[in-house]
Image (tube, rainbow, N blue to C red; front, side, top):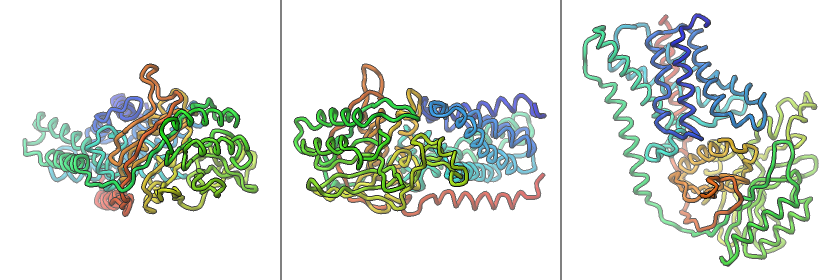
Length: 517
């Protein structure tokens, strides 16, 4: 098809499917290392032209995104299809660059040349992956580095350069294996002489140094607790769908019921957390919700953090509201900064007002303008609330971490995902926010996954029913968190510096190979 041999289509499809196996529900870290090999090998062996390279890279991307983001069909089938076709552009751009950086000599491969090619290829992957996460507000879920969430020794370098640095290491390893295999093929065929493989040695060195750093971070955390915070996070499992919200009476009843169970026999609790807004009305307008808040606070919740819509005049915010201090004190409020496109706002709605009907609440939400750090009245512990997908957006969490909170708290409602892998993928992406900022993350969700994540990305506890083998049933987490004095990690200070380095490397490569045909 399109002048491309069947082998090219097969290699592209294998790369797309292998990438999918790196993420939930499969969550196989090895798949992340091997995924790029089929398509990358085809590229260096067959040297497709510009058009063929773009088409094959795009096909690999379509195969990957349609399968890994199949959970989007629980919200919108048309949106899932269009979004995946669009996102596939970025793997296509990467493959064009990978083939371009192979140069013009198809017969000889040297250690120096292979190292240069791999560095360029890994940098191009990081750059195109970053573009996917920012263009048109971005959809950066499931970067290649996120596939290493369960390989904690490797994931620890995220505190140096975020997921982009982990993606670079994984891409570097996979592409090194690709060129090593190609070099073996040429040597076996007698096309070139056998020589030492310093390129393979370089790949082993990068992996080794990454693992050594990770082992040091995991085994020697060098942190001393300054606060011990008692907490409970409620998972009410209120049934919902994208277009119809639950009734406030039902929501309040479920939240109070499970909160009372969590509080019973434990004395006063420092922090009780309810999930993201579950009803289509604001907390100020709902006396039932206000009575629920008062009831659980009187039963022992010193502070209560809850999600709710907040209606102020003509504007509606998706907010996190902290009730703390003496009864009657005004609550502290954080308004969600990063709204979900086509979920909480519609682009061009000012020009085409009828588009607002496509948004489930019936109209656009208003984005907050400032980072919200909330403080518990009794302990002076500072928390950074994150609403919905914000704990999967690294730049949002980094801005909050720069305010030096003791704890990240995510309030979300993943009921839209149903039984799909969406909630587990959300958790996998969120784990890296704890590693990047070296702050613990407490997640309170409607129907999963409610969890406590350590500063090393370890899931310390989660709501899980072993009999039903499900995380989607109602329940709660309860325990204590040891909090350390917050400091800024290298990633918190410098952000996505691997992206800027990669951009420079790619530009240098394009200049070097501008005359190669």
